[in-house]
Length: 391
Image (cartoon, rainbow, N blue to C red; front, top):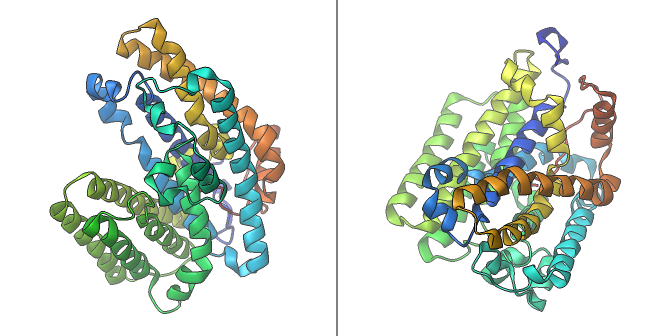
């Protein structure tokens, strides 16, 4: 781990600690889904409330991924439209399609995954033709019947894919006339109206567009934009006001989900902006450097594959354990310390087969450094978005 004197110059654009953030976010999602899949539906939540209070926030890894994508993609459009879309498609689609194929194959050939058994896996089956088509075109988040079918976490890949098109069509044009912080606050406000006011569009998670914009604003701050305190204060005050009104007007699962995901995303955007700015100015604390350590960087390196495929593997592990009739605490322990590690190992194998051939130049440089057993900042370490864990 490099000491304070080993920092790169402020001109360097690479931030190794972001891979650590991504890896931890992916791990949080896996731990959360491991708990969710433990036993029968809602059994772990009802019988293990203390553990649920600790790991139940793991779903907030998704808004962190979206903020990271906004941060890393803020300046990607400058390379040109053709290169931008080709890069995004090559990076996201092949592993996604491969994971979808594996998920469908598991359901088709593993009898345990074909019949409902009172577990959380029941929402993933039966597979329908409309759902398969929606997944292929990455629009499954448009319907509650499609969103969690086949492979639940994939809905967020669809959201991020759609945001990739909104970047040049909406976010960058608006950025020319609005301060980036106010743009993020405005989009967060606009995208929460339909789900809160009329209960429409919740499955699509439109507020994630605002969190992507928050990540863009964080990127500008990291690159040296001197935001005035009044701008920061106004944006945060506006977001806090909307969050507060939302929770009072409609205090249910819809507003609760928007509230928690938006709050986590805003906090993540602020933290990432501050860490990146401190890193550029050679004053990042030791904790930031630890996020760029070899184990955490490797976790971020394989996080997309882990995110894509962990869900059906965890579900299968739970179904295999159920006949043993274990007490729920022992069942959760087996899921967490046996099934989850095995699932992650399988996902890492999937990474080398289905994702590694499509990694970008920056990730190839990271891979070489990880193989060499060192992670010294290099000029080739340029930031680029690796969605998952998009996001």
